[in-house]
Length: 143
Image: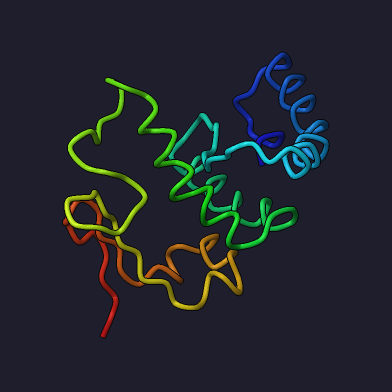
């Protein structure tokens, strides 16, 4: 999708092609050396493009990582990164990435078992039944 975006100039396209060409090697090295990883899409452009790329990331990672590895990258791995960001961490009042009293917690109820099929997250409109963030319900299609 990035290579098909109509707003990239030739320099940006060249850089994108270079990054894409190294992605399989990067994943191979990450699997070998086991660095701490997080989940994020380094996307720019419209909200539509960002949301599409964010959802597609689950499918792309599923080619190389187990569902459990991806869930850890997206949850506790991201929490560890934020906790290490010092004063830049917007969540300093409680712990992240854990389920315990006083911790920050968001909640997703998924239509299916993401440990069996992580790509459920690539269709959030269909598969996310309940979304709670910071205690606010953003979506609830539970019956």
